[in-house]
Length: 122
Image (tube, rainbow, N blue to C red; front, side):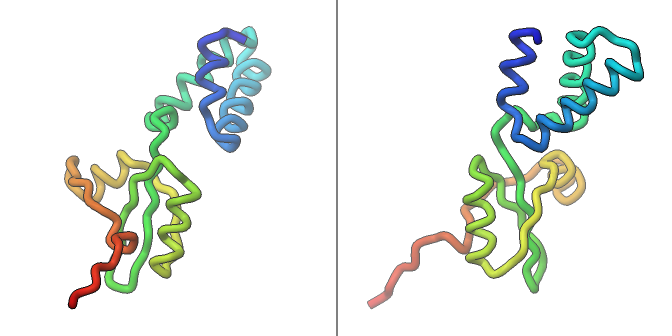
């Protein structure tokens, strides 16, 4: 495997690595491409469809009784922890879909409201 491809594939989470591997195998077997070429093209295809996969950032959508909110995180386990503390189910979504579909192409980041330390007033 090409060194650059290997370095990038090593950054993928297990599910995306499996998706890449399956796509490369299809391109090699069904498309008749050499394995190295198929691996490169499969990685490019994955990056085309999921441009944020190597950024180390995930977006979690959380449904609340009064609407929904999104957490942008570098810690997937932490995102689930925050969501469960807020009493809601969470699912991972694509950042570009949320920004374009819900915010008209631009969004402002803010603090997670459920994780702010409480301040006691005297």
